Amino acid sequence: MTLFESLARKLDRTGVDPVVWHAPPPPPLTGVLAPNGVLDGAHRWTLPTGEGPEDVAVDHDGRVVTGGNDGRIWRFDSRGGATELANTRGRPLGVEVLDDGRFLVCDAERGVLRVDEKGRVDVLADAAAGRPLVACNNSAVGRDGIVYFTDSSAHFTIADHRYDLLEHRGTGRLLRLDPRTGETDLLAEGLQFANGVGLASDESFVLVAETGSYQISRVDLTGPSQGAASVWAANLPGIPDNMTSQTRDGLFWVALYSPRMRLLDLLAPYPTLRIVAANLPEAVQPNPEHAGWVIALDHRGEIVHSLRGGKGSYSPVTGVREHDGWLYLGSLTADAVARVPAPPRPGVARGE
Image (tube, rainbow, N blue to C red; front, side, top):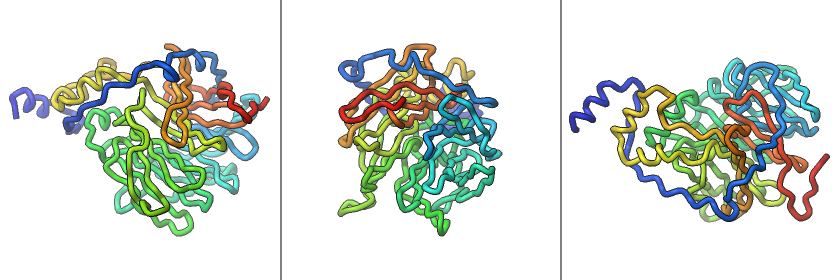
């Protein structure tokens, strides 16, 4: 250990213990990835209280549901009017709509919750596969009610997610929960800040966004490779966050928290410098670019749509959901949800 490394670790206040890694060069922003201003005109629906509608879902009547940093779960009607449904008394992140109209909420502080519109909040899991949930983040729900969800880090809470990205030790997990029995099991571990979850339409595999390694991994749920994990989409152009299950026309939408951060990638091979960066004031740490971005991938993991906004656009985009010709967007820090028209595709009409 060098004197510089010894001093850095002695002065560290964060507990980060980085490992060496080499970030791949980001793909060129050409073709489908060429910059555009599609998200610049996003229409916003402001939360009545709080901020940070990190994820968005659409209920059976076409109403948008989200949760803010004050614990409140909100439902917006088609004109943007908001009604409070419940308060988790935590920090709701991922939201899914269950078949019976209730909501499945991943709460960063309380775990996997089931919420109804009368305000009842039931804790389905605050631990899984033998460990407490430290950073419960996002989920997808199968037709049989089975919940696939992420615990992003074993060491850092969602509020301290930047430390996990700087550390790059890969302690995230993809987990499975049977709400009928409360039983949980581990599908994949060693993930780099496990984040968004998406199910294939035939439920033959589940996808998980690895924020810290700019990729989406796949775990097979059926067939001869059942239980096997593999990289499904590598070297994304931005930092992936929440994602959707496969849409009826075969797409997986992914929210990109930010374009790739050059400084973060440059620091990747140098653990001691990342310890130093973690202890600097937040304003001078590697920080995301405030520009909205969502992408859509086909069944092969190829990017087929890229919708971007310029600086000052609705950002950072952390949640995305397609419904009736619209893309609804959520954000970790904005004070509103937003929507833009979804890109037209043959045979898919945009709703009014």
